[in-house]
Length: 526
Image 1: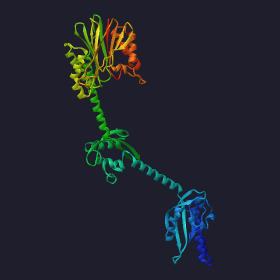
Image 2 (image 1 turned 90 degrees about the horizontal axis):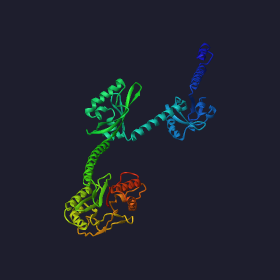
Image 3 (image 1 turned 30 degrees about the horizontal axis):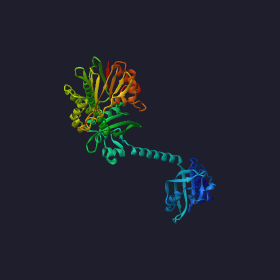
Image 4 (image 1 turned 90 degrees about the vertical axis):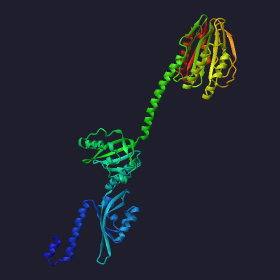
């Protein structure tokens, strides 16, 4: 400006020179100010080669101006941007805010925002380009990180297994993921902008929903927030279904938004209902089983049977389930006692019912004469039809002891052989009698055998519950151990013999309860 004033005061100075000088001063001041801000000023000729570069290029690209001059502007662009930016140069039109990806001298990428102006003479010929680049690398990284973060968040939301709904403080939906679309039947476009209360809250809960929202916005408290609660939701078709909801408030500035995670728990509620029903059914069944076990126990002899010269006693240790074990003893005539031990296959109400039926049948014929073989043959014929239909069978051992003659006559229907302890030899031997289990052949003929018992002799009858009692290693207690315990305690009273056998079995198994009933019956000659 001072140069112009001087020209006016001194006419000898050429006015055009003064104007050019003033323009140069103005541009220089602009360049100095621009460089102070860190912006890179540049000029390119009409072919795109740098003819001027400010020193700010060093801050941005690490080059001094002399290293830039004479180089084409594409020399500093990435390969992708070389193709993209060429179209702007060919248009001869100003450009603003053009983002470039440049390569720094040390090789790392630099992002700039570029503004360029073509300088054109009056004839329309391009003389040069003049422009400025501003380093936006930090901003670009932040924006990219923000975009990536938003994309990750969106990816998480869209792939979540829960329906995710965002709601503003007025109760209107601002976001709605794909799972919400499937769960409720409304698309994203249909749901966003709608009232949550009107769209997915059943009519009879809407007033509670509005009161809860108002309570939180006014007092900052709501008992249903930040926890999982079970409620009901409304589908597009109008059907209600149970859901688990978790809603959290998020404060943005002075306003709240709410994020809700919703899961359909229809299957879970149905399973819970089924479990409750099963528990009720199990409780009823357990009660019925307990009653059945009491009835079953009441049918067994309640006290030992003794007479001059002998004593008979027995016990049944029931398993956790109802079984089909059965033992009984009764006087058939003066001095003659009948003993029976049986095992109906299986563990349920069915075997227990057959046990009752067997006892009733035996007691019904107790007053009539009959040998063990005859009793088994009659019993097999009587029960065959019922056993065959139910696909059950019974093992049974029957013994008649005459206290006057000390003769023991016995027959077996596939039952484990009892052990006979002979006091004079202090050895045990099985009472073997052949015969098929009851319920297989209605015409089966049973054979019988007899032995003479002496004072001190013991007959032990048992079901396979004791011989097949298992320890932790899966080993059976076995008949040999039954034999050994019997020989050790044969001199004791019948009740003590039974207790010794049970104690030995429990010690072997390491527990007090067994998977099968253990039934024992002892006849001892005195």
